[in-house]
Length: 340
Image 1 (cartoon, one colour):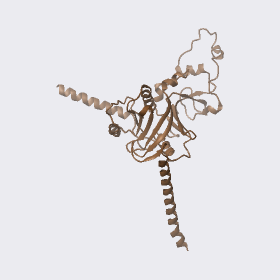
Image 2 (image 1 turned 60 degrees about the vertical axis):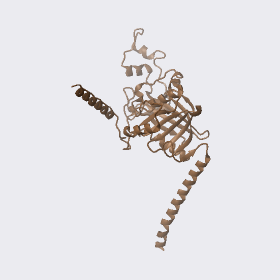
Image 3 (image 1 turned 180 degrees about the vertical axis):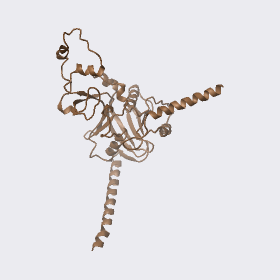
Image 4 (image 1 turned 30 degrees about the horizontal axis):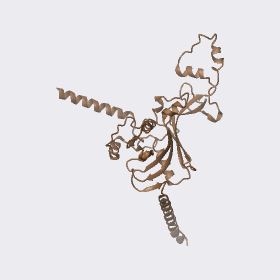
């Protein structure tokens, strides 16, 4: 009888696991492919601040990441790769600290490529929170993936094109015609500085505020709480008193948009709303130092400290362009001879 009860318990565990997996869709409705999922883990021993940076990056990659991924010292890259296949993981974000120099590697599973960034500077989410008087970071922000915006990557070499493709595919794609504005609550901004060859990595929350509505009125609509009017003689005094009836912040025309659909009880369609971005961290300053074809292995496409790899890639692209031009001329010659 005891054996039969154990079997029933095992079946119940399996059913709950399957039910949890059904909550998150596995197919991207825009591209038709798999939804990008990620593992964020460390390679080697990390100091305390870098360990916290690893946790901040996991939170940033929500909801399609393993937030409570457990690591062991004996785990190697092959162990993570064996687990990634059945779970549909498409990207690895690996933090290491060899010779006290922090690095971040972003890899596509299972065959690469792999981008290696040197972390020049970083600030944790806790540091960002301490630097702001009104820090807002609620759990509702992480129910949907962030938007991704890339700036300054155009017109670069092949290594910058690979960087663009890698970060564009690390988050699910969106359809601007069918996306719900209420799901767009975070944004990741990557700005490339060509002169210093550095990438500024920023993480913001998106907040909409109706233009021309006072903070007190907006707070009443959002919280559904009756204000305290005991010390006031009239309701108009509540609206016209100094400090209470001031217009909402961010009413600049450059920061206002007209919403096509309703977002919430305050931000309605066809009304102007001010878009406000608040940094929630983490903040990174990266330098791309290496690009490999495979998963942390294979031919080196780009090396910041070895110009020969860059020249070899440029020669290969020039050779491919020359072969394409020769094919076009060979296809045009028979047509010309036929006309003669």
